[in-house]
Image (tube, rainbow, N blue to C red):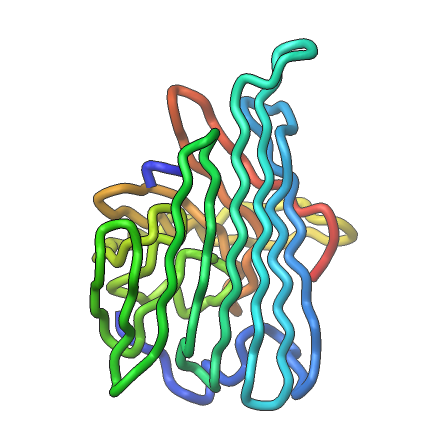
Length: 214
């Protein structure tokens, strides 16, 4: 959708977010704005049960002009994690009629992926581009779940900014992630909570505004 490094210690990986319990569900619910105008939502549901974590991602966008829809985008993905390691991810995307799909799974100390560009293989610490997991801040490779490809990424950490969220104000640190196909800037608190995102696409500015607390 967008133009669009090492693993952190295991103790931190097991506590993916502040106050994470052994069995808990958290929901990252963002309104997506284009040049300040709401165009849809990006919702990530993370369900942790002991050492296993299940993740569901739903992204729905529509750019309209009066009664006409000029552009529509939908994306769905499902992830399964065991402790700090990705076990599988499946994703489908409909980019205004152009469709993509991928399936990736852990095997033999690596991650294999089948997507539009065929079979690819990454290391065991490969991360999906779903942003909820703070380990993404340290990744060297990600699965770009829109196009269904595995790519190296560069991450540049910015200066802290103040964000007003539902019921609270936080300091957030931008992390600009750049790959061959993407450049996005998710924002995380110091302890790793995903609280926003910005990017530019087709000459427009996109911004994520959190609607409810995780």
